[in-house]
Length: 267
Image (cartoon, rainbow, N blue to C red; front, side, top):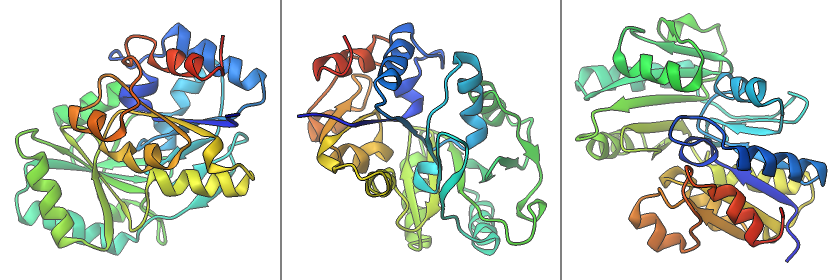
């Protein structure tokens, strides 16, 4: 099989446990780009959480943000945007607070990241990971007509599954998925990483069978099950390994490089 594009999740996949690129990963990305093979970041992060990676490692690539809610090309142009309204965001946040769900909410709209309290240790941790700063405020801090790319819930890990289930029951009009044992991503209905890669393949006239993807968690499932060659990182949950089957080394052990080498895309 000749593969023509590589899609890659960020946290737990592209980045190691210190949230940095391994040398082998960076060399692999640049090797792909030298062959004019697109390397596309597919992440739940917003653009502001990806730009520091580009700056540190001196490369750029297309990116799918908010798990498919926003797609930006190599030149920084928006190819696709599908968020929900400020009204929907207000209903969601009111429910979280009224029901005293054991989490803190984060609002993302393009490059804006709004939180209730920057002093919250969960927010501070996320700021250090993505190397971007949140702003304190609420939905009304955004301009009229702004689209919400996603709302992120940072949860008590003992209650993440319960919170996910309650949100899904209350808001069937939204796409709600766990991206780690503490994070729940909330996007517009029918938004997923799988849909986003289909969009790009159609736009760039690439057969979905000629695609490769790397991921490590539940919000990567649709993407991994759609591509021609999926790779699940060794650090992924056991349940996913049993479902996907194709497992490479971990994000700390050159997993991306070894996966690409296995299929002949890098030396």
